[in-house]
Amino acid sequence: MRYGYAVGMGVVLLVAGTLSAWAEDAKVFTLAEFRFENGQTLSGMKVGYDTYGQLNAAKDNAVLVVPGASQGRGGYKIFIGPGKAFDTDKYFVIAVDAIGGGASSKPADGLGAAFPAYTVRDMVRAQYQLLTEGLGLEHLVAVGGPSMGSMQALEWGIQYPDFARGLLLIVPSARSDRHVQAIFDAVINTIMLDRRWHDGDYTENPVDGIVAAGMIYFPWLHSDEYLNTLVDEEQYRKAQRAFGTGWAKVWDARSLIYRYSATKQHDISQPFGGDMSKALGRIKAKALIMPGMSDRTLPPYMAREIQRGLKDSVYVEIPSHLGHVACCPSAEGTAEYLFVSEQISRFLAALR
Figure 1: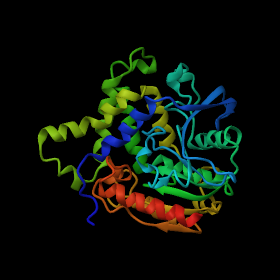
Figure 2: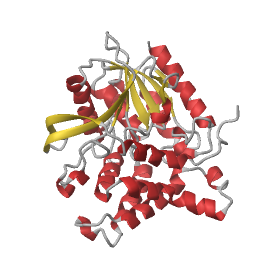
Figure 3: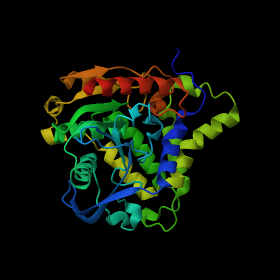
């Protein structure tokens, strides 16, 4: 099979998965009071989630799927179902909205700039409370997801090393280095250039800035090889605006800025004095490390850094020219879908 030359724009699913999920009713678990890493607290913190399949009597068949930065709880829904990678005939699958988006508490709920600046570690602690207090779980088969989802999975392995047997690290990174920070700084500052922004005191969502920010991100999401397949001018212009247009439909500007700020600032080694080997050394779970071979947002060197520090891992690159979005195929028939599905299925089966 020749991977990577599938029909369709991978960029669309990252947004479309969010659109479909946020438009539907979610289950919501409410935390009476949540303390953020910066010391601030929030009463009535909501954690939105969906469940698929059945929890078995032993409560040992649960899998937690966590989203990428632009995604909601439906971002990986294409892989969930009977006979799919997250096989609901075998697993009880929980797909969660991270703090700051979807049905979870977020700045757009009304607090705006008063909403606490959250971190990836905050996301994971809220998810832990959902699973233990809300769902009565003590163990997971695995936890993971793409991009920022891999950051959450690593934090699960570090903060709760005995909770999950496996970590799904898809187009992963353990930290946002200067390369990543430069991309996300451009995204954030482009939103702020919109005339509606008004130094953050806006009454109308600055959608032009959001669309423009998506255009800034666009060439980083794909490889040069993919971009040069867009030979038709109309096709190119549509693809160029697709990510930002999708953002503008589901994201409030401040909520989006908070999300990318949290991702930009993340580094699993920070609580360990910057010692990456010490941070990764906390992890007991086996890991599937699956970067995209043509990824420019989180290039494979970031996945190799993770691999070097883990005790037990499987490393395989997605053989695709789609770049970062190879993690999130647009249809079940694509080569990327088949490859990612096969790797996840095989990894989960080996954990049981």
